[in-house]
Image (cartoon, rainbow, N blue to C red; front, side):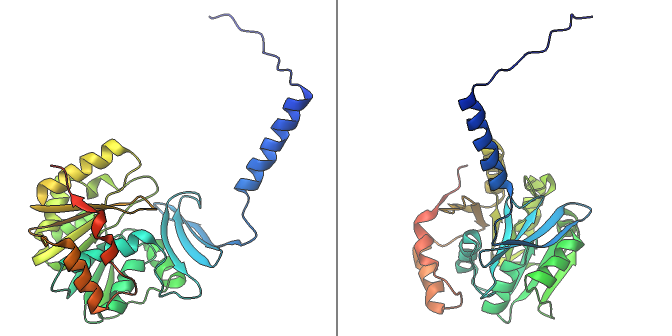
Length: 283
């Protein structure tokens, strides 16, 4: 048996005690809700703690706690606004999908992207796959999700859904980041191949592949690039999301394609300025 050590005695000076006290006060203030913050929903599902927080005129969805990654955000004064940067950049994929008659979204969140598509392309048929029924309920009750004959939410595992579906879409979005990472089953070579098989001719996949670990992010992008003959990446300037765009072919002139989408005036924001952010996937 190892010999026990005598307890260490710590002696702090008055200045150190004051500094420690100030530090504890600062930490308490940082962790306390602000006067402008209000938790409007907080419950645990089978998979996550789901929170909806109103703060400074915005409503946001979080998994785990409100200090983690923001899943969705809307502007309370104008629910049609698109405050999340990566959602606006994701929409640039529409410039590469000439048909735009159907879309599949894997990962519902607060339904920001499906509802943007619903408003901008009224004839588009939109399918959404979401694992957690609680997230579906929260999107409906707090974020303005409205289902109809053109927009349908499927409560299902994304990998299982893609494995059994025989349908095809013009645009597919993979946006299923959880509390810490994208579920492993949704970033396998087989899953990416299933996405590619499920595109109509001329269709495009856009995937939010950001990961907290750079090595895992590069590995995932490498798998994605091996599946799609044409592959481009875009890193959003402020949020740092890594978006991968995959298809059999993408326009040679990315800037011209984005400018054309802006001229059509379907989206409530411009996408042409994003052209300089695109670069080819490393293979």
